[in-house]
Length: 286
Image (cartoon, rainbow, N blue to C red; front, side, top):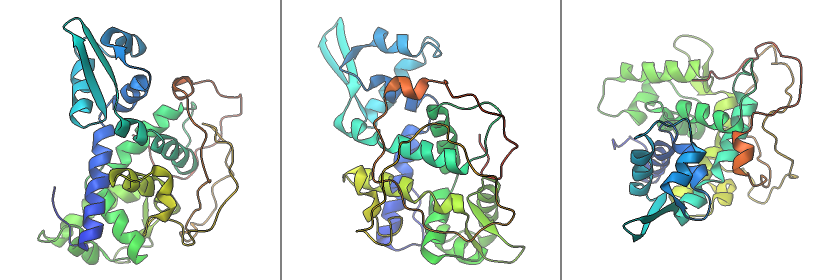
């Protein structure tokens, strides 16, 4: 993986988080991880839970998750092979509700409500775009930066104008803002709101508990002793209309904990009836 011009600790952190994102972003990987989150199962049992996968698609996906250390294959005999999550795979699952909650708050509202798992998949598509984590890291650390500064820190050794395509994409995705040509760039509220997601992924990648995300030196809460009252997380909450002017980025505090998810909750599309709202400002989806 290419090395950025950031300090070694930050560079290593970005590399670990980027690698974690690329483990779970490929199509169907999140759904397969959730299907595997049961006692060890036969291949046919897993396939029955994922009927949308055609013959021949599931096996290489499971093999890639095994190679990544998230799933494991246990062969009791030639005819008795079982698959399940590793401990590392199970430790990664609590990141998923954090991603879905971020999507619910910061991405545009679709005409038809999405299941939580679709919220996760849409978000992962945005977060794994080229250079995205490194650019977001720099803007979080510096509050704002010019295109030349971002290029020097994110793509050292490359011509500085090469930073514009990923920057434009991040603006289109609603994660970065600027007031005009030649003006510095900064995180949008949506980009700043990724703190609990990036903090949790960083902790997991470093082998630490995901619930220590608030302790992350960059993305954690300013006051590590600060607490917020837990709230019940639902996949589709109502939101106030978008403000007329873009507010300055603010560090968001995360709930103290999120309720555990059951696989059925993630795949369910059942939502309470409500009027279809006008399209709100926010990041785009896939």
